[in-house]
Image (cartoon, protein in one colour):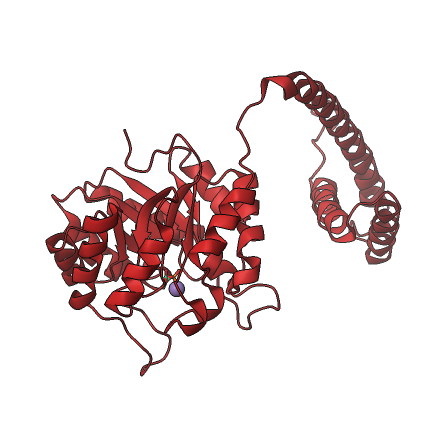
Length: 355
Ligand code: PEP
Ligand code: MN
């Protein structure tokens, strides 16, 4: 059974952004007692954007974590960015490791970690790279898989942009973890709403969204006194706030027998509509071919900018009247029109009977 299997969703990871002091780690763990925490997290080496910030307590903090495990029975997870971190984590009985977003971007660094993991089958979680590149995320996962690690999960923590928007610190760009799921259907994918939102007040709604999409777990930064945190103070929840969040979190099932009939009806209706759309597209293409022939015979250019502008404008307007997003219609018709022009430029098949 996979280390990350959870009969009851979500697979929950909680704990402070950073291990700051022995008391802070202990009190946070004490606050989390009784919650369904599968992993207690804490950063002991912190990848900071600028030098001079708090960079983690290192080995000293691993001792505090060991105490938490002994007292409260929590399994532990920390971020590793170097082969040496892996070695120390194992020495102090850390149960699971994660690779941070700033490390996932660097294949050399990920490979160093993968090499250090050879022959050690410890569960690994790989956060997405800071940039929205699903191939890079996949590459990091593949490097870790190739080192023989059998329990792997991915963590979606959002993607950085030039300026943080008013709502999010890191854009969720949900389509990327969804694409990862398409590529690795068996891979557990967790969501880290703390780093996506950057704000405690928004964590619950993003956690809920992740559950609605079908994520398997959540990593939520939790601190006994968030306002005083040495790192990521704005986004950490108190243990009581986390308890509240869990109480209101709605977990969607993958299947619901009662909904099956209704869904089946709607799916069949969709199938019929799609068949009609394809039929119409094919008819439209036949007309395009005929127009192409007339244009060829009369030596008129296939692409007519004025006509294209008119098509785009009228279709967007018509769509908009029927509550369809203008951008959606524009993108769709660009594809339809491009294909039509391509068709019109095809040379007509010559008739072998006519010289
Ligand atoms: C963290 O989890 O505290 C962290 C540094 O995260 P990320 O790698 O997502 O920035
Ligand atoms: Mn953090």
